[in-house]
Image (tube, rainbow, N blue to C red; front, side, top):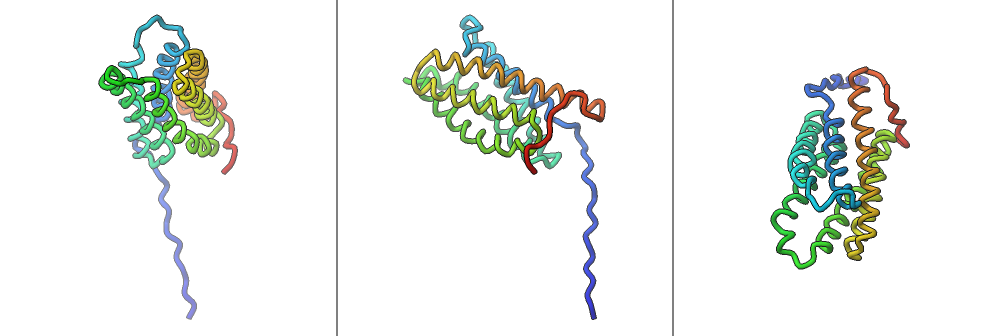
Length: 199
């Protein structure tokens, strides 16, 4: 007697929270902008970025990552939670450890190298989402590489160049955030984000 197999019923996923990606991208963009402005030499000695690293780029981005877990978006959850942790960790390093370190530039070089390694595979996987998100990870990859080279070499000119690239990263992230907001509101693509590079 032939056996029949019954296909399982697939229930469509219904989201109970709004898309947190535009919020996470905005938090990342603003904090990156403030720190990059300092690195590029735009600011005059202040650390305006530090409080926002803990509060906006850190806590708010971490929350966006947790909401991405709720939406079962493993990429968004991993990216936002990790970079939320990055900003919180960097803020606490500056507040608690930098004053006791004998070589802050070397410490920052190792921190940036570690996150560049993480960012490399996330950049590859971001190419499966859309070109706007890929652009964020691509420019961030360049920023982190330039900054860790500049910090390891203790060359302020290289760090300043990394700040300029970081400013571009912030602008790309703000665009991705803005597109997520308006496209989500309209229910259609108002600001183009581009297609995935591969499936």
